[in-house]
Length: 198
Image (cartoon, rainbow, N blue to C red; front, top):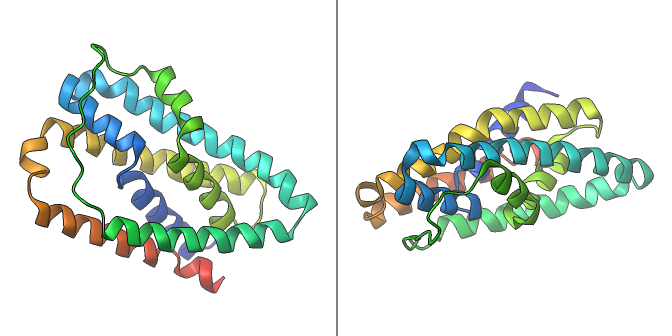
C-alpha cells in the first residue's frame, strides 16, 4: 500500500469516524447524561467492535472478490458515489437536536460492540474502507485497514463524548457547526483522490 493511499485511508477513517452518525450521537448523549468516565466502556465498545467488524467483513469480501473480481470495481464505484453524496449531506447538515438518554445507566461495552452490526453507517464505512482503500483483497491489507481505523476511531468518537459534556459551549453556535461540517465534507472529498486516480 502506497504512502498516498495510507494517508487517504487515514483521512477517510478520521472523517467517517468523527462526523455525525448513530455512534457519535449516542456517545454525545451519554457524555451529556453520564460524563466521560462512565461512557468509556461505550467508547471502547464502538472502537474495538468496529475494528473487529472491518476484519470480519474484509475476510468475507476477500472470498467474494476472488470468485468475482469485477465485484471489487463495482463496489469501488458505488463507494465513491456514496462518499460524494455523504460529503454533500455532511456539508448541508442541520444542527443536531439535543439527545436525551432515558436509561439510568450508560451503554455497556458488549452492547456498543454488538450495535456495530446493525449500524448502517458502520456497514458503509467498513465496506467502503475495504473496497476503496485496499489495492488487493488480502488478509494483510484488511488487517492494515482495520489497524488504521482502530488507531483513528477511538480518539475521534471520544470527541463526541466530550462534546456531550460541553454541549452548551460547542453546539449552540450554528456558524461553528456549519464550518465544521463543511471542513469535514471537503476532507472526505479530498480523501477520494488516490482512489479515483488509482
